[in-house]
Length: 168
Image (tube, rainbow, N blue to C red; front, side):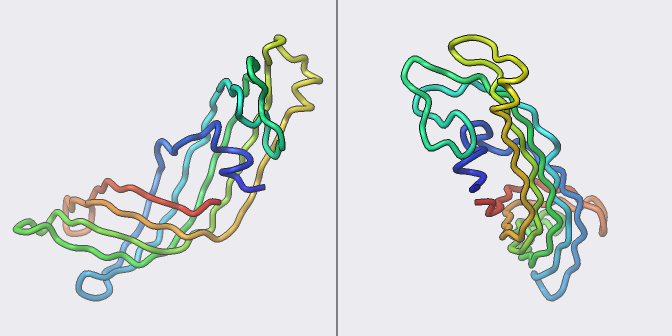
């Protein structure tokens, strides 16, 4: 399966938070190395999928007009990574810098979804089991970051960033 197309996109439209411990090492001038671990804690979500959406992962048909599926799902992902960073100090303030990072990660994703109800009513436990879909994959992916950092001391800082990982 392709996670974005066949499984996650109708339910998880965007990531909403990541835990990211890391260690950085300056190499030369404004270039460095960063090793870290991105962890998206387990997410649980209940959604109503409507007409035109896929009723479950891998479905070749979509939900008909005037119909719906109530779906419960959960997923989590972790990805150790290594990348090259490019840091540029903010003018007249050496403690603040903007940065970019490009590297590779080994991502592991676990996900599960189950339909609990349709327009006809609640599903029985046996019917729910027939709709249960799981997804698990581990593979190397490209990762990129863009953000800003504030150094609190010479060795400890905080940062805010946007991160992209090629999971499709």
